[in-house]
Image 1 (tube, rainbow, N blue to C red):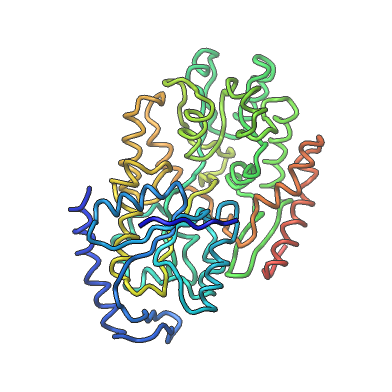
Image 2: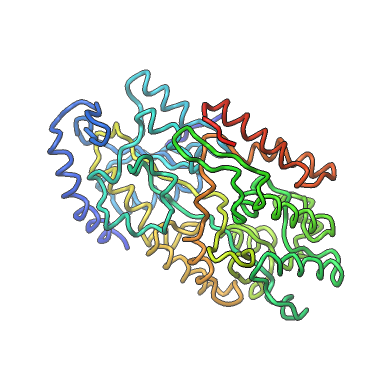
Length: 450
């Protein structure tokens, strides 16, 4: 059954997963008998009475295919699939509904997909999420996720969700133009800036990137280790947007914006599509740029687009990249059918049938990511092997940029974007950006260190 909420390999593999999880889940359930739902100690999870029944799964429209495929492969599992907005753009729909369910004492879904990576900032306190690494999932399975991928899901050592996909940043470039013009792909930010200046002089109108989207800081400033968003505790954040790491990246962006090689239009805007889509030499961006942007939106012909590692500052021996998006799966602590719900959660995050072959984004689960990359390479669209830089970047997302309850993209959109459109430099707006982050964080109850 499939319903919709408005916001305003195979079966054999599935059976093996059930068998591998059954022991851990059975031990967890037998330890609590038919108890109520209270948590007796900080690290002990006491499930509600396990009565079985249908598994209710909430997904967004993109992940609907995943739930439907699982249902097709597991026809004996009673399911109710509900579509909702996936908390897109920080709608807080899920938080609002869970708050209502907590008051009324019922209605919680068993498993939920969220397009946001910061759900633990409220879901743990609301006692909505089951602790996945306390007996529900074996550590041998959890070790398969990319390094740091599940950090947004971990609170005080307890794992409260699973990362669906990663959006690690890399350097996308037009291999045909690079060869035609005799340019070398930059490996440092200094080389990147120098090439931007050369392109401005020799091929005016062509771009080496874009700074027109609200996720611009997640591409450049996050990768540059700018400490604008260092979450140091459940309700603690350190904000410093005027450090050398921030100012030198901001200055680089200002230079390239001024000479016209960095656009200030959104890559999804009609203006960008009309004036820039056919004139991209390079573009730092997340893993999903390849399929969603270059192939899908810009319609760049096959055999041109290639991937290189994100540039690094000269002398910095610890590679770092940013992250733009991704998503998480949460298992409800109120589920009365943990065995079936846990099997779905495991399948939907690790299955080659979905993550490796169908999912639109780079899977957070390593083995599925290898299958996904093999499929991308065999598609014939890309120029050369894209696997190595994407795999490396998956483990290089800088941990100093956290996932707070407040939206950095919304703050940037309200504070920096208007100034960019008015001709202001990013460097000049860094203090205003800091004040806006501090004010938003404090409004959300964060202790702020500057």
